[in-house]
Amino acid sequence: MSLPACPKCEENYTYQDGELLICPMCSHEWVAGEEIADIRVIKDAVGNVLNDGDSVTVIKDLKVKGSSTPIKVGTKVKSIRLIHDAPDDHDIDCKIDGFGAMKLKSGVVKKA
Image (cartoon, rainbow, N blue to C red; front, top):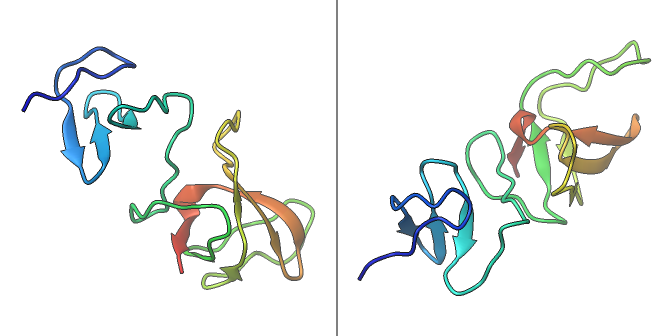
């Protein structure tokens, strides 16, 4: 069985992981037979795939601009919303108790 070339970079090094086809050259992921080129998969700091509505835990202290107290390690954040087309690295939209609405980077959280 031969796998299709990557639709993004056209390389032939595609491999399969469950239902996903993955290109190791450009990290593009898609489902065979479906084109999901515009939607990127967002993963936490340890590689777990995140979905809307998941709960995550902060894995390092985060300084908050305009606040004298940081968000501490172990802070649990419930009901996250993913931003797939974020212009910067802040791809999680959430509300944190005591801080309010905020955007976080997926690299500083772990799926709870």
